[in-house]
Amino acid sequence: MTDISWIVIVLAVLVLVAVVVGVIALTSGARSRRGGALTLPPEEVSPFEADQPPAQGASAVLERDEPATPTLERPESVAGRMQRLRERLARSGALGQTLLSILSRGDLTESDWEEIEETLLLADVGMGPTTELMETLRTRTKVLGTTDPAAVREVLRSELLALVGPELDRTLHLDPAVGDDGLAHPATVLVVGVNGTGKTTTVGKLARLLVAEDRTVVLGAADTFRAAAADQLSTWGERVGVPVVRSEREGADPAAVAFDAVRTGRESAADVVVVDTAGRLQNKAGLMDELGKIKRVMSREAPVREVLLVLDATTGQNGMRQAQVFAEVVDVTGIVLTKLDGTAKGGIVVAVQRELGVPVKLVGLGEGPDDLAPFVPEDFVDALLS
Image (cartoon, rainbow, N blue to C red; front, side, top):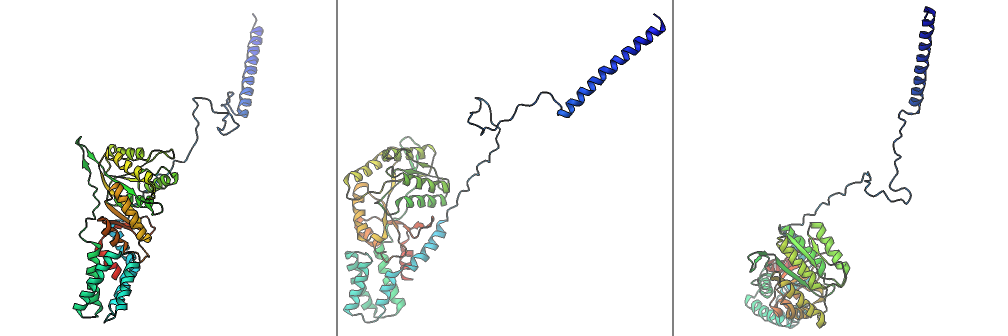
C-alpha cells in the first residue's frame, strides 16, 4: 500500500475512536444528571400504608420509644408512721378530753358520774368495761382526794391502759415456718371482713408496711366476685413491686386463687403471702363456710399464721357482733381497726378485745397509702389524754 493509503486508514481509525469516546462521554453525563445508578433502590413502603399486611418474615424497621422503667415507691418507715399517727390520734381524743374535764371538777355529784358513764358508753367501751372503770374511778378519786389535773390524768391513764390490755400479744407472727419437707414456707396471712370496711385497701397498705420492713411479699386476690377488687390490689402491688396472684375469670373459685398465691410464695421464696377475700355479711352462712374452705385450702401449702379481721371503728357495737361471727368461723388472731381518726368511737378497742380475747394489732388513721401502723396501747391512751 502507498503511504497515502496508510494515512487514510489511520485517520479513519482515529475518527472512529473519537466517535466512540464521545458517545461514552455523553452517556455518562446523562446518567450523572439522572442521579447515577441505573438500578433504583426498592421503594420504601410504610407499614401503616393501605391495608396490606407486611410480607411474612419481613422485619419492620420502626423506631419505638422504649417504655420507661417504673419507679417503685419506698413506703414510709414504721417509726415515721408511729409519730404521724400519734399526732392524728391526739387530734381526735374526744373521749379522754371529756373524761378529764369532768373528773377535774372537784367534788363530783351523781350527775357528774352519770355523765362519765354516758361518755364511756357512747364511745362504745361496752357495758361491762364501763361498769368496771366507773367503780375503780370512784374509789381512786375518793382516796386521792384531789382535783389536780395532773393527778387525775394519771389515775385515768392507768385505768384506761388496763382496759386496753397492754399485756396482749400484738405481734404479727410472720416468721417463715419449716414444713415436713424441710423447706421454708412463707408466713401466710388471711384478711377477712364485711363489705365497706376498707379490707382490700388494708391489704395494700399492709403490703407497703411489710416492704418497709424489707420483707418480700406476694398478694393473693381471692375476692373473685369483684374484678375491681383484683384491679385495685394489682395497683397497690405495682407501686411497691409486689406480685399479685389473681384469676382473670370473674367468679372463679377463691380458694383456688388463695392456694395458687401460697404456692407462688413458696416457689419464689417470699417471706409473706397476704390473701384478700371478698367482703362477707356475717349472717350469710354459705359465704362464711366458703371462708373456712379458703383457710383449709391455704393450709395445704403452708400454715396460716395470721387471720386478720378488718373492722370499721365507726360501726361501734355492730362491728363487735361482726367480729364474734368471724371468730367462730376462721379463728381470728388479730383485729385491724380502720377509720379510727376523727371519731370518738375509740372504745371499740376495749370492747372487741374484751369479748373475743383477740388483740387489736394494726390501726388505720387516714386515707394515705402509709396510714397503717402497729397498735401500741400506751400511745393510744396517751393520745386520747393529750
